[in-house]
Image 1: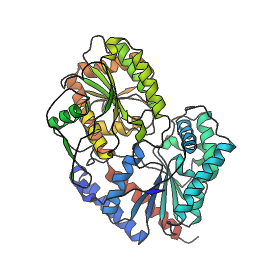
Image 2 (image 1 turned 180 degrees about the horizontal axis):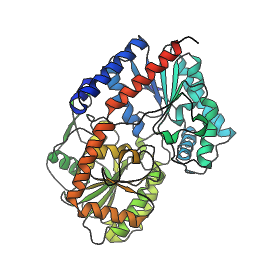
Image 3 (image 1 turned 90 degrees about the horizontal axis):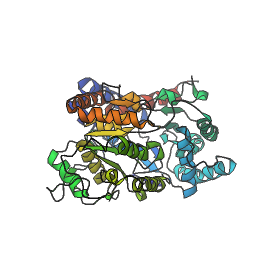
Image 4 (image 1 turned 120 degrees about the vertical axis):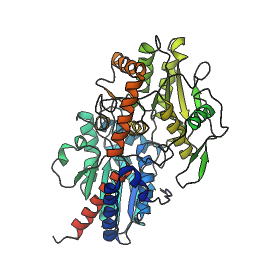
Length: 478
């Protein structure tokens, strides 16, 4: 088990963005939690320190918590390849998908609990009775009994789910449910994700995810820096600054040194060529291949736009064993496209050796894009949508999961009713590409939406209020 280093950040920096009222609420909630915690620790436990939305949220949220006087810490569990195959199966199941089609029987349950038993032994040496333990997603659910046994306030947080239940969703819940009964609280990203057996349970709370506007992924970048970053890594043909820079979380200067691994025929598109972009993990539920095929069918003829599908270098995401397979499937499908389509589509694997450098490249890519697409078949929340909206980039996304909480169709972006309908995709993309002024209006409205509802200051307040309530409940007379 590894501890991720967290450097404190001042939560007061949110005030100019969110206004005095929300800043005051954040300070009051933090003060109340500090008073109730005393010298106790808030532990966060998940399965990876880099890659994916959970890790991206934890780093800034815990940094601001520490800056607000809370002893917030982050631990990453260890697991073998079979453990992560099982948890990926659960992940897909909670989204209503079959994943690799493998079983979730007694043998899998035994292996899952054995791996987490070894992690629990390490945690037991760290966690005290007065602490709070926040466990994230299916990978950590099996730690609930051990943590609850310490007397710590133990909360399980699910960032994923499906709008509608099916046999695969229920199979995943059946696998985890016996391990969750002792949790003091449950947190879901959407009320629709709460399973039937927890409906009406007072332990259930809904807290939507958030983004950090000051991170390397979301901080302001000058247009010339954006072009130079993308030119340096090879996505766009452009010269300029040899080593384009950004500001790291601790305030020190950073620069983009590494290159992306890119599959493409011919030269990179010029900086003035319209670029449609999807940034996500190489995950079948993100349907990168479907976007590529839909773009080839409906946008190559009659449009100058290019498409970039960007994901992490697959060796840099430890808890996702399917990434290399999905990337391989996208490459095979790209090779089968007509030459005219291949020349307009690039597959981009972004460097992961420096996580903040990776974030800065994504920032530049989202700012440069003419349209950001998130053609997910299922989605827990969709942080890439919030990131693009924060940058006032026009967004086209599927009406699934938490995406529909962020975008009101036609007000803050466009939603696909059926993400598998390539004709609908083509029409929506052309609408945004052919009407730049309308697209700009949607982008501006999207930024206002994120400022009002989905920044980290709101997220911190809701966590602080929840933890204070749980600590008060534990202290109350029976």
